[in-house]
Length: 373
Image (cartoon, rainbow, N blue to C red; front, side, top):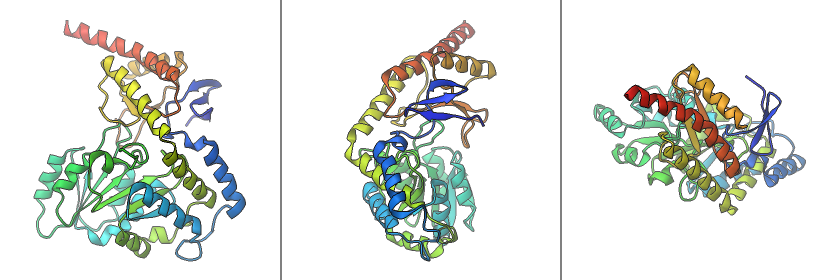
């Protein structure tokens, strides 16, 4: 791992160079928003660092109740449970759902946290083809008896920006089934009001469990489970992980409340993000790159070989752009260049990214034409 220091909201210092930073997942740059940073300081001064106890013993601070109410309201969910982070949200929800499920069906490219969550169920775990509602329907059709299936999927897949067809999944789901969607990258970002994948696809919230992180769109830290009141009660009763964990540090809970407020009161943030995403993706499509037609602020480019990867890297550095090459769980085995757009990137930075990629894409097109000849 190389050291990287983010500065100025959209830049980073890497190997002593200041480069445009299209990485991470702080889509509105709320991690460095003045009001959110002030809320951390205020929270530390008023409440101290942490409660040093489980919420089920003596650690249930009023801030957690306020944050859960704010999250339930933001996502139009009946209830919310705040967790230590987004990864643990899936594990905690699984512990609470364990007795409600007869079969688990998981997307072939689901996030590692969902695969870990699947291990908590004492029932068959079946894999269905990535984002394939027909394959899910076939696998559901083979199950016998009074089944109570649970579908596990990402909402917005972070490696390439594709979106799960939740409305189709909900349509084919048996009456006693559930969908648990890891909406870490969609929450606050997509949908008419930022409620995530269900809002964007038009899927009903009934029988839907939505898990989110507070470290991406909200720029803070922590996680949450958006669910019905009955499941919330089961989390408190059945989840050993929730019962045995010290909750989110109080200054971060205070900052998360402020981040929700900022995102709700400043529609310009989502507007700018949408404009930047549309500008970048439209330009890339015009250059021949197949980019998913989604509002996801993520663009992925898989190099064909090591030589092309080196070419892309050099081309980006020449334009002052950090070449963010990653190997992500569920993503391409050999890794890919992944670029995350924020509401705060300037048009000049987007153009630098496009210029850096264009040289490599032109080389790719020329080689394709020569092969065709």
